[in-house]
Length: 218
Ligand SMILES: N[C@@H](CCC(=O)N[C@@H](CS)C(=O)NCC(=O)O)C(=O)O
Image (cartoon, rainbow, N blue to C red; front, side, top):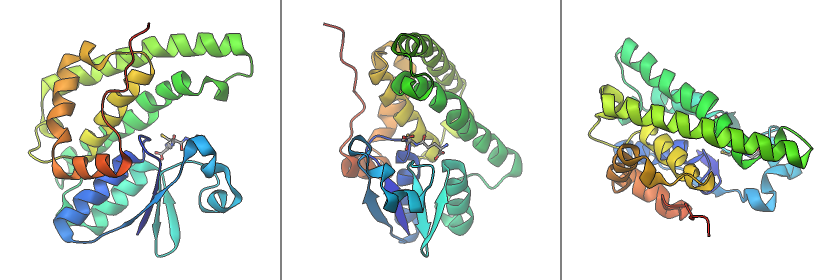
C-alpha cells in the first residue's frame, strides 16, 4: 500500500490509520509526499492517480482509492485487528457519522477560510467569504469541543483513533484561521492528550507538523 499525503493536510487521518494498522498487524505502507504549495497535486502524473488533484490517495496493488471515509472503511474491513472502527453496528454508524461530519461540514468550512479563491474570482468577495467562514469554523470547533466534553465511546478510547487524527488536523487548521487553540481549552487539552500516543506521534514526526500554527495579530 502507498499513501499519497501532504504535510498537515486531511491526509493525516489515513496516515494515522495506517500507523495504527502497522502497530496492530505489522502491515506497512509506503508514504508518498505531495507538496501542495509546489503544485505537485496538479501534475499530469498525479492527476492520473486522482483526477480531483487532492490528497489523500491510498494505492492498493496499483489501484487508487480516494476519499477519507472510503479509505477508513477499506482499512477497517481489510485489517479488523487494527480496530479502526467499532464492530457494534450502532457504534460503527455513529463513528462514521462523526467522520462524515468532519469531512463534509468542518473541512469544507475551513476550505472557505483557506482557499476562498475556489468560491469567487473577486478579491473583495473572497475576503467576505473568508471572514464569514472564520466565524462558522469557530462555531463548529465549539460544537466539537462540546461533543468531546459530553464523552461517549468515540472520545473515551484508550488508544489514538481516526477521530483523534481528524480532531488534531481541524484544531491545527484553526491557527491558520486566526483562532487561538488556547481559546478552545477543552478541545486543545483533549487533542494534546492524544498527540504523544504512538500512531499520532509517528505520523506527526513524518509530516513534521505540530499543533500550534496560531500567530497572534501584531
Ligand atoms: N473529501 C475529500 C477531501 C480531500 C481534500 O480536500 N484534500 C485537500 C487537502 S486537506 C487537498 O488535496 N486540497 C488541494 C486542492 O483541493 O487543491 C477526502 O475525504 O479525501
